[in-house]
Amino acid sequence: MSPHDDTALDDLASTDVAKVLGDDIIFGRLAPGTRLVEDTLIARFGATRHFIRQALNELERTGIVVREKNKGVAVRSLTPREVRQIYEVRELLQRQAALRIRLPAPARLIDELERLHADYGRHLRSLDFRGVHETNDAFHLTLFAACDNPYLVESIKHYMWLSLPVRAKRTTDVAHAQASERDHHLMIQLLKGTDPWALAQLCVDHLQSAKDDYLQTLETSRFPG
Image (cartoon, rainbow, N blue to C red; front, side, top):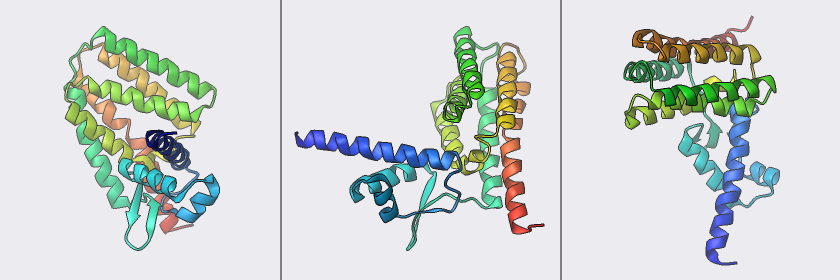
């Protein structure tokens, strides 16, 4: 095997580890603030330290873990102030992206969103929450890509990742997923119409449930009972 083959295997192994850890974070199995200790991960995955460090670096690049001085890597934990600030930016970005979409939207966009909407429903009925999560993100990024500003779309994608600790709490909540499905259907209908302000407002309102639930949980944990 050539050195190039070794590099390819390294990338594959670290990607696999990063995906498993990412799933653990997305689905709430690793709570915000949980430390990711290299030795523990080496024992869990039977991987080398090099693989583990590559995986942690990849997760750090996505923003769902943070490296703290003298403490190592931990699952990103957000304060109430940080949650409000992140969602304030998400609301601004998504409102502006929605307002820039030409209405009625092109048929090819409607067709793609309806396909993703159908996939979302199938994943939800089979309780495939990995599929629900991935299809949800694909639906929104496809929608906002129609604003025809790739820099705006990349910013939205970045803040979607930053808000993962907030969103993860609701990922496996069937009632929340069903409410999102109804919103997605309404977004498609609004894209067929001529009211960009209604579409933009729905894109903002769609964010509120997960944010409010997370903030309420933080408040309850500070002042139990």
